[in-house]
Image 1: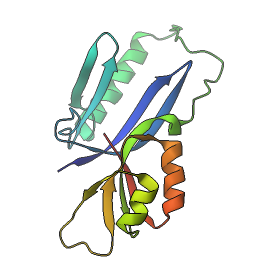
Image 2: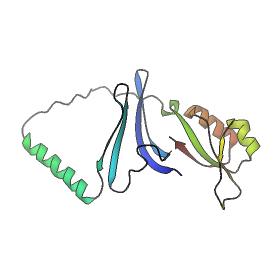
Image 3: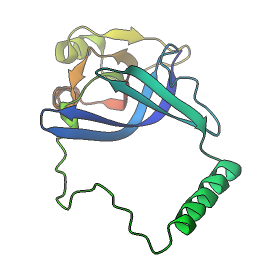
Image 4: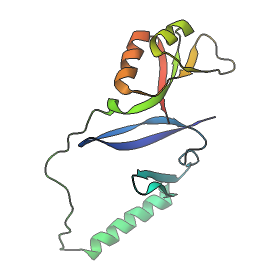
Length: 163
């Protein structure tokens, strides 16, 4: 009942930022759930704005050609002009993305007792016809805690973040 999407995410954490590109499982109520085919979307959460999404064609031959032509027109309009860009010369040091909190969908060959010993309370997921493994969703945890729990459990077949 979920959709897997490749998300590029960034979050402010203190005086720095975390950035991550990874697949996420999205529930049907998430605004990005139905973004498919040649469409792309940018989903933004602002402290004053709240949630906003910008959606439109962004992949495929016609949208790509349109973007290339728009870039060439913009260059032609500003020949011999220096357009200032507000970039800093200093490299921005990103914070470790593992401090971000997520739920995780995990597939493992470990038994339920071992899973609960390491991860605590989890929600199990059943897939018809799949035997010899258990699948579950963890409580929200940071990446450091997840990495530690995964190493302790061992036998993890697959893991994906859940939004």
